Image (cartoon, rainbow, N blue to C red; front, side, top):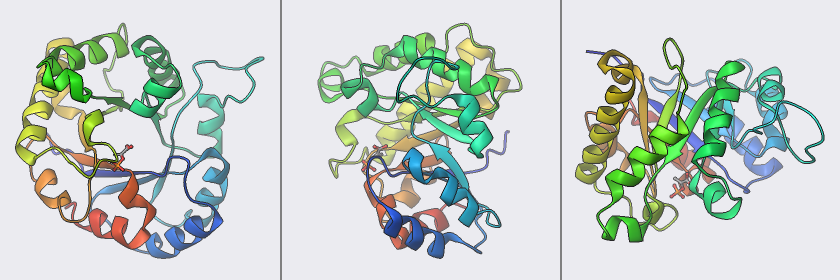
Length: 249
Ligand code: PEP
């Protein structure tokens, strides 16, 4: 059996500012966590967060990464730059990026490669939308997102996380039930085993995201194949997020 350390990731999206940064730092610092805790603020706050939290156990991640290394790509930030800044993680393929910024499995695949090449841990986000769930094609959608998003990538001795975020659960207050979430996570691990072998699949941390809060966190985290949580809205309240983090043991 693999002992996978629990992981809780905050995704601030395009929220927060100096106030949230300061109140989060004040809440998080000098606490010990059983789980690995990662905060993904907007790019502009990454350096300050890292400076403030340098003596804490909190890790910083980015919400995105460029698929380009360098060049004339206005507005982009590369994996190398994020690594140099001190990031350890980066979210890739969040459903909001897929829906609003034309990201797809092919662009995610390039981004995963870039992240791994620079020793950032990619958190590849996958998940079906409401219509796909109703049409009972959830598994097909996830298989495609995994096979295309990871195509040709060797994960041997690499750190990667997969976040299952059903689109219908994001920001809606309707989290997947622990049973549904576990069923899907088990399926994802099974698919990873088919692609990379059982040993590798057992070592990959799978996170659930979608309307997680302090009330439903524990039950989700106690499911066998759920190794962590990706938290959006509830991470904007530092005390609420802290409560979720402390439930991960
Ligand atoms: C997210 O967008 O990654 C997310 C999980 O959001 P929320 O927790 O607000 O549903």
